[in-house]
Amino acid sequence: MPPPAGAGEYDDAADVLGGLGLIQLDPLTRVSTAQRLTCLTRLPRKHRAEQVDAALWPAEAPASFEAFTKVACVFPLQDWPLLRLRREATRARHGEKIAPAVRGRILELVAEHPGGVPTGVLEAEFGPERTTGWHWSQVKEAAELMVRMGDLVVTARDGVIRLFDLPERALPAEVREAEDLPDDTLRAGLARRAAASLAVMTVSDFAHHYHLDKHNARSSRKGSGASTGSPEAIERRERSDAAHGIELAGLTPVAVEGWRETAYVLPELLEAEAPETGIGADGPALGPVKEARLIGPFDPLLRDRRRAQRIFGFDYTFEAYVPRDKRIYGHYVMGVLSGTELIGRVDLWRRSGELVVNQIWAELGYPSRSVTARAKAAAPILTRQLGVALRLPDS
Image (cartoon, rainbow, N blue to C red; front, top):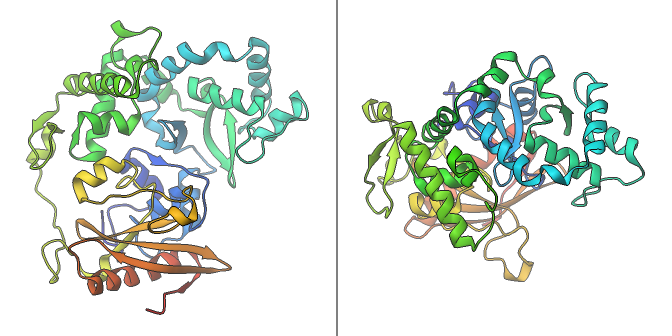
């Protein structure tokens, strides 16, 4: 992750997306949207929040597409072929849930609107039911399932409104043609993509990253029942599928101290020179105060909670949906990253043009004063990027 000052590895949010491979989306905006927080923490401090969405969903030509792992994410446009097996698996399991007449009419409506169509236009054609909050109309559910199956694609937005489009119209020809690559080529490509994003990963890490299931592992295993069985049995199948992709990709197994599972890396990564860590004077794990930054709850460093625990010793629970009296830290808590370690956490929210920092906690083993200094150095960077004022706690 490049330092927040000066030129960095990434020029804009599209570059960040290309480096990460996927960015999780989430509707909560207590501080900012998930994609903005993920990108801003990796971009120079001069970068502004509104520039993130403009780069991810540019008006002139698509740079990304939206799809699902277990949750909604945005992916680099060139990765569309890598998720073809996942789309086929979704169609095999859920395709019959959409009536042919409904599917056909949705496709007709989308075709009539160059540049894509919002949910509201589709809903208006079918009746009075509208999507409100977490309640989706039947038309919205059908359109979203068609996105998961690849009948529709989302590569553009009108503000925050997603626009449904036809893949044959929205995607470049070379991207669509790459879908015809052999299944095992795509499986290997997906594993290499994950390895490039995660740097070092276990089978479980790979399975979690793309929420793999048995249908996008081996063609000889296609069939029904992918989601049957206990959670433990499903997890075992997903790990087996991921292992097959890793085998096809030719990744190099390595042992990581303290990890129970074998890890895997790209062979070329082992040959590369190790990057500078930016270790500061406070100890081997802390970086310079001015280079600390705040990490959102849906950031790739935290979205896999077990991986964050294993790598950073950072036990994170997102408490927005936990009753207030049962929360340990707060409604919306961001991690404090310094150097190569997550050293603390901050409870904060944006209100009336201010980013309000409620409380700062140090992780066990890190001096409270050092953590507080870094949190207070990172917060002003984020406030400038968001275009708001900052209010720090009195003590």
